[in-house]
Image (cartoon, rainbow, N blue to C red; front, side, top):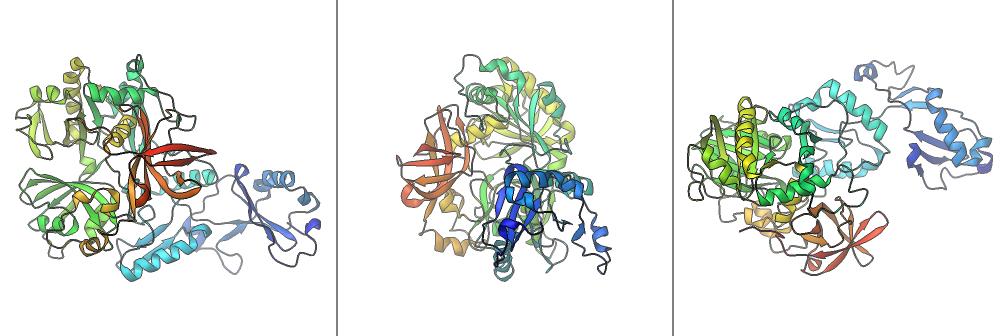
Length: 578
């Protein structure tokens, strides 16, 4: 603004706090006797990077574009309504400034994957600035950042489709529009969709799946054709916020999984193939577990940083002497493997996700579905827990791994993408007479929390070590050296916080994650994952708490909007079928 009469004579640049008007995409700050106004409520105005580079700095600063008064008209009207003193002032100067928006709204930090020694700290907003400076300084000097979890900011986090100019433009424009919005944790990104679909997508559409999106993948959250399963079941309705992107079908699918059998699309799981004469030694060096075991073994293990922080949790299946399949979490695992490859060419790492697919067949009747279709023994002795083998399911060649992320009997069944529909149809036809269903991600998340399974990036990150996170069983300190081993040996005896299971009695009080946890009036931690447990009949929330508070029966409170929800520390797992 020009001078505001009510601020006449203000000698200091700023005497009032910055004011943010969230609902109108506005913020305000003092400038002596004037007010600076920032506005995000106008149309997106994307600028091509080449146009920035070609600006004549003698005529115009590259980061300052000409003010467009029409785009500011609503902001000025709202300002005069909110701050009556501005009615006696005028707009004196204005600009359109440039901002770096990424497709997920977070900075780009880290070393270039292509040019060794070239580091990036881009798309850094004022609110990130000091933290980014500290993080990158630690990263440069120590080779890792010990102060912050940076997996959501790493410049190497993106999948190839997320780097296309069309994708970047569409998502960045949307992020500009939503920058001041309150977004629901499950709210999917908009266009462009769909981008990545599993071979089962058409079958899922036939079952009227409700899709959400993750790293471009369309993932069923529930199936509307299962609506009839809700009748006669106890599936409580959560509070209004938690009931968004939710259906009572979620609860029915979770309970049916425990009763009969369900098919889950696990295609979005990142899959890496590690081969070569040095593959076993390579994976031994990177992981905390012993993966150099017999062919057919499957190992749950961790990737650590030098300071002992968890970089990822993975499964490693040995399919041959020099052939491993790794169930990973994201592109950062692929980048981490690539940065540690031996220079002698003895190890090759390949992302096989796009060319493969996976169905999780889980439930007490899973063996009744699978065994009649198979050409080999799927009894308990024929394929023990955490073992893998190749077989045929009908006419479909599969790699079967006896794993279950929902805590029920069953297998992850992998095949090539071209055989995916045939695998789905074969299992579906066999499951129908037994009451089998297709189930979605909502049921999956509830079931895995009842079982106490952790999710990297949500429950545990670079900031946490295995003993704090409750996955110390995946660490084999008696094996040869691995990345992070020395730090773990120091940290093992000094666990000051724990990932803790909490239960909530009120069925409406379902929280969503990232809420603060209080001991009395003192904030002591935060929620990671949460869901309603449809088997146990209680709400579940995992939270980071000081170790002295993580004792069974202890009562804490979760801050949820204007409420304090009572939660009790519980022993885990909450559900553990024999």
